[in-house]
Image (cartoon, rainbow, N blue to C red; front, side):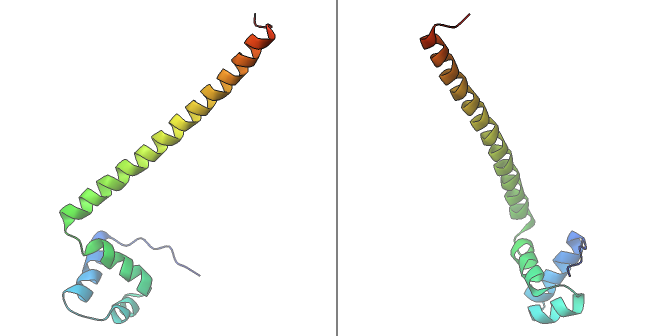
Length: 98
């Protein structure tokens, strides 16, 4: 059963500092804070980077998500145009176009 807690960035940074700066074991820090080892390892992966790099990575992820949404929309438009082209090509062959 997982608990859906939201921890502040300051809390996460302090937990990472306990491992990276103070040298405590990940298992000990995670147990003391009541979080899973995996969660703390994820925080270490994110919060051990400099703030500027984290912001750049976040900006890149935001841009990638925007581009994926745009690509999906453009692919849908392309598929609609393909279907329309097939429809009108068959209509013009039949001579039933009004």
